[in-house]
Image 1 (cartoon, rainbow, N blue to C red):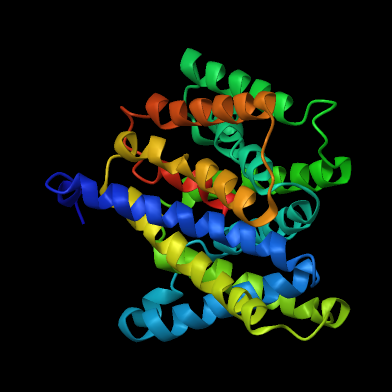
Image 2 (image 1 turned 45 degrees about the horizontal axis):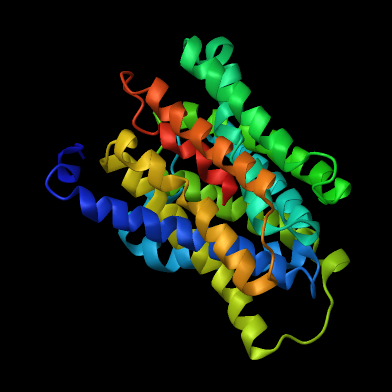
Length: 304
């Protein structure tokens, strides 16, 4: 489908993206809340299981074999495995760290892709790309600086999640040119469902869920599924330059939900670091503005 639908109604795409990043922030906040009662692999098993079920029920009848048909299945599965690893370590990090700071650091992923864009994708980094990477790292250093009060084990978990994010982001850039969005989303849901189902014997337990906790557990899959679908659809059909700044509204949602649910307010230096990370991330689609890579915005999916 061409990009023309975005021209007469850009406001529609902006609204859908605002809603998508709100869903991602709700998912991370719910994960942190539930992780105080249940093991992270159990939470992820429910999230990916519900996500897979929704895809099969909602998209299966209309997509048929297109739901799982791929051209490079091996790479699609490896990409999905990267997201599974990233989700697990992100969940462990959220157990120990505030939502806003965690989200900010994970948003470093798109900038890390810039570093490997030249040897893997043949892209030129350029001055703007280097400025984005260096500024992004400086912003993260402000967030995790000594005295910020962040849990060091949580930061270590987040480092693993960021590494998985980098691999996932890179594969997304490669595969988005030849694979359908629904197929890639299907395999991530399938891989997560299988992987975390295997871990269930070692993670099953905790108190019987209250109606509210059960709603959040089941809602995780809906947050992830609908959020990813809206996110990828919006960036396929609307200009990245229009939407990139809106994408970083997730940091605002994360900060707001972290305050409402956990009463956490980042200090001034942390807020400055978050703003630097956001500003640096916005320059990533700017440096690619003249290159035909319509799926470049897929690099932020791991933040979800």
